[in-house]
Length: 466
Image (tube, rainbow, N blue to C red; front, side, top):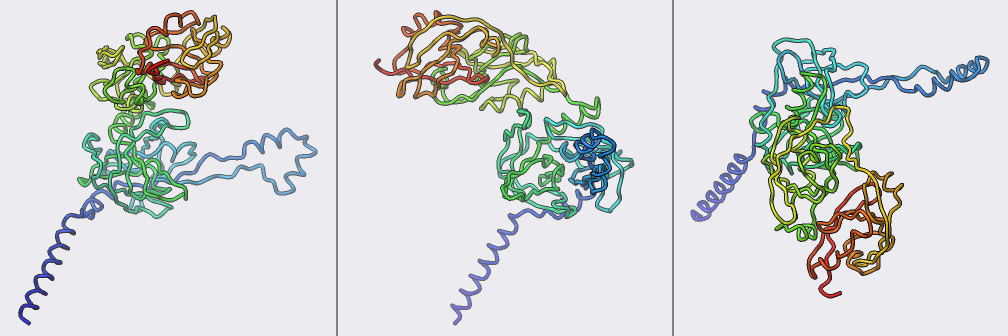
């Protein structure tokens, strides 16, 4: 009996100790919530009225007919739309951060504090490329939140969010950082934000709200979710504090945002390309095209170069490059480490400026002539008019690809325009003379193609015997 009692007590204390240890390992968010909540706000928005098309159509009708439409109840008066989001105060004199998409097209904006105080807000400026906006409310000695150092964000760390999902004011949710540096290009193709991915429950209404670390610092601004249902499925994305700090400072100073600009079209490096360019593994951003008179061209960067480091930051994938370049102040000179012809080089680049309303483009010019077969490709000249239309200075047309050939296996398609093979620029058919003699059996050779209107590189593996 004594043995059983001792055993019971041992098991009890063992389980109690395990439970205590487990609970001790879990974070307590109560202090962060109490300290931070007063500076989190709800954004209430009345958008510009819609229905302008109906008004225009009505005005085009003869006066004698308009009354029939008015009589039948089709009022020409546009209806107002309402929306909401979240945000937070970051300066005691009333500056507020939220998302661009929350206030885009707003007619009136009201900021509500947790104590139910409400302020009319002025939109100081917005930045669609980063989905950030800065508002101003009247007030002194307001509670504020502090932006954290983004470099400190680590995958697996605990984070929490405060916002107003579905109108449920100032709700708190928690989770962990799932990934950092996520690329989510906008519908316009902009890709300047290295998003923080989390599994925190974020829903409509959380947009613009803060994402906290356990020190109560804001590590990001909640911006997007991935969902098939309209609600959270554990994939949410926040704009990191480094981007927020840069964008907000510019909006406060000038009302708009300028970014660093390089002027290149880039693509990822796969295994074949890495092998063909002499890289130890797939990494870097492969330059497929260099813009005319761009900072890249002025610095001596060329199509076929692979940028593996920029301004001291490693470039692992092509998506990393715009994240780095966009945060560099225009006019700054930095080092770009590239791989060219299998050798590493360092080139100094003066970063250009991409104005707030500018569209990043890469452009070139026109020429051509001939016909040939190589690596399973049937190649013909391209008409000068087409090259000019595509903005190319030269190239040859792939008018056929033999099934099972090296070109077909590597992904070359009929209709592609070949502009470079290996280290050789290809402007016309005669530029292919002697190319076959330079190809090494068993090796890969990079080919630069124009497909549609987009440049890309692929690696063509040369067969052991032909």
